[in-house]
Length: 149
Image (cartoon, rainbow, N blue to C red; front, side, top):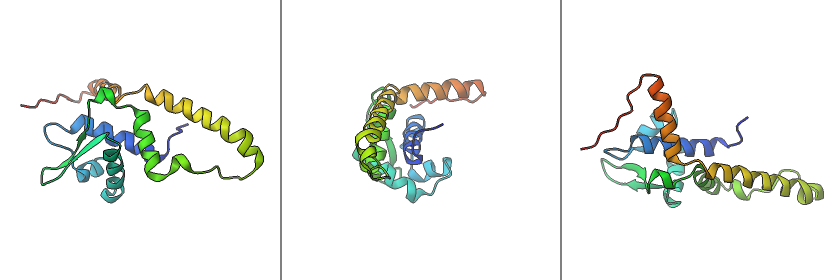
């Protein structure tokens, strides 16, 4: 069972994709959208939220696109999920049922579990995900070498 929203999962994948492909040029939103079979307009709002959060850096112009705003070892999956949640208001939505039991018992317990889940995601960096991709794609015979001159 995956506990992340579709938007949060997409945000992690987008940042990972940028980390893997942003050399020597930034990754264009159009290319990113095509690689993941998404409409570019849907992706662009999420990418802008990641820029506002200081995770990605947007570059304008004909060779523009997105690149990491800082070293991939300093960006965690938890930080990315928080940025995605904040951009949609997911983190501030009240629980669906309105009752005393939800307010007193269920909501605090679920919120605590969510904090534990985000803390676990904070331990996973984009560098960890890049290394995992390099390891798994090497097993498939793909060449992931990235040389910039």
